Image 1 (cartoon, helix red, strand yellow):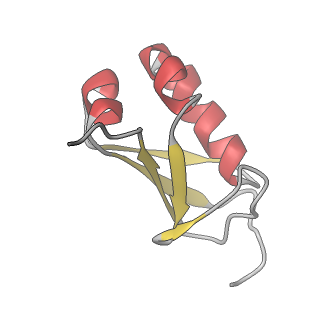
Image 2: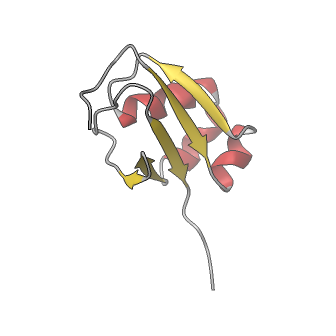
Image 3: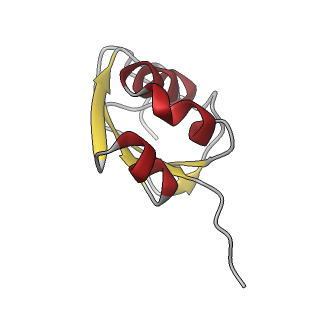
Length: 86
């Protein structure tokens, strides 16, 4: 994976309950060095996301990622809230 680019733009996509809380499918943010920075940025943009992102799994380029994972330029972060099923 390329080194992080803190001035790069990243896309954060929302799924299920995260999409409902955000009211949109995705947001674009910049100035984020880590996945956690991107999540914090979208939470500032859309405060209703805070309880959802606190319990969500995060993907970076389709792979599970920790909040301290470095963001490459043009990265896509996905927010996947817990799913109930039966």
